[in-house]
Amino acid sequence: MAKFMKISFEGLEFLEKEEGCILHVYKDQAGLPTIGIGHLLRKSELDRGGIFLGGKLVSFKDGISREVAMDLLAQDLEEREKVLNSLIKVQVDQEQFDALLSFMFNIGNFGFESSTLLKELNAMHYSNIPAEMRKWNKITKGGRKVVEPGLKSRREREARLFSERKYS
Image (cartoon, rainbow, N blue to C red; front, side):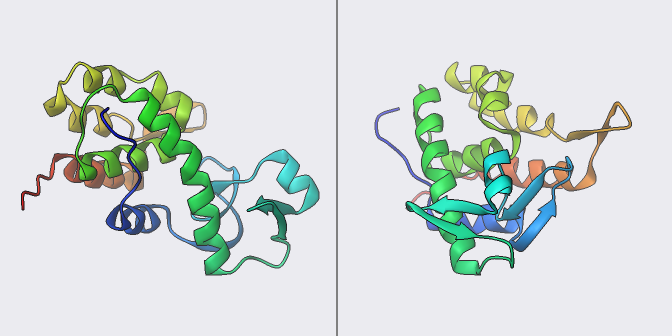
């Protein structure tokens, strides 16, 4: 990629809508403890009852504010933006970057890094990316992979965002 890209304001809004903003600890679809806008709580954070945010320990025992949730999202995205920028070897536009970041935020860095989607992207097979995104619509339930309707819808929206072209 030619330049370091960051998520756009529209991308942030898209991601917040996809993840939701829950200001107390809850279990995500995989049953993992989460807070805010898709922040998976690490064991160390659970043990101490707080998250380091900008170098300060913020307790989540009584929940967090929306402002803390947004700051936590920004902190989480910094690392993911670096990873995404390092993995993409071709030019993408802002909407494509936002869609890829939302996708990677949801499936995890390792899942994205080892995906056929990334191989297709770096081979400049842009038209294959929406179909590759749509494949990631399952969760494990009772030891079996099943299509999760919410993920299926999310993948459709990410695929649409990736395919948008805005010319000005």
